[in-house]
Amino acid sequence: GENVEQHPSTLSVQEGDSAVIKCTYSDSASNYFPWYKQELGKRPQLIIDIRSNVGEKKDQRIAVTLNKTAKHFSLHITETQPEDSAVYFCAAVGTGGFKTIFGAGTRLFVKA
Amino acid sequence: GAVVSQHPSWVICKSGTSVKIECRSLDFQATTMFWYRQFPKQSLMLMATSNEGSKATYEQGVEKDKFLINHASLTLSTLTVTSAHPEDSSFYICSATGPAGTGELFFGEGSRLTVL
Image 1: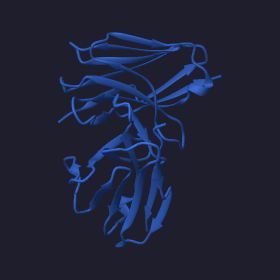
Image 2: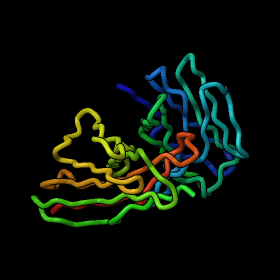
Image 3: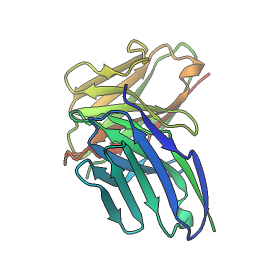
């Protein structure tokens, strides 16, 4: 079945440094790759996404890259701030039905 | 827009009883909703896809007789955990794709179930 692997499971960075989270997916039919941020005790919320016809997308301090050939996609956060501390989930969505499969999550700690 | 509300936010029940969790789309119609289960410090595991007016589609390994899903209207899906046991204790969270049809999921607040 469909599978999404995510690394690392935990990431600790100093405030101001960059953080990179990497994911791979198994279903070659996946065409939409969202990233969700879940703060403690809250619901996941979309922070950025990328579609299969695009290789890179940036939104202020956040960027996502996609390599469809290798089935890899990554989240890059620059100039990290303490409020970036949360759990980040990558996901892959196939065609039709919007069934979303999540990675295991990365717990990001940004130390002030 | 695209607000999803879930109720109750937490519930404690005795082993053997059934518990119903409601998921509502407040400002849009959701023909499809998704039910996830999240263990502490773990990922969101898709349990089933809830389709309005038809049977839910369950993921492999999820017991459909244990986790009953009903999607009777375009704004309401319910998950009933039947004959609950302590191992069913978990955080259950529903979601729906918004009206724009982009694929983005909008999540409910989640329901924490504790079975004694």
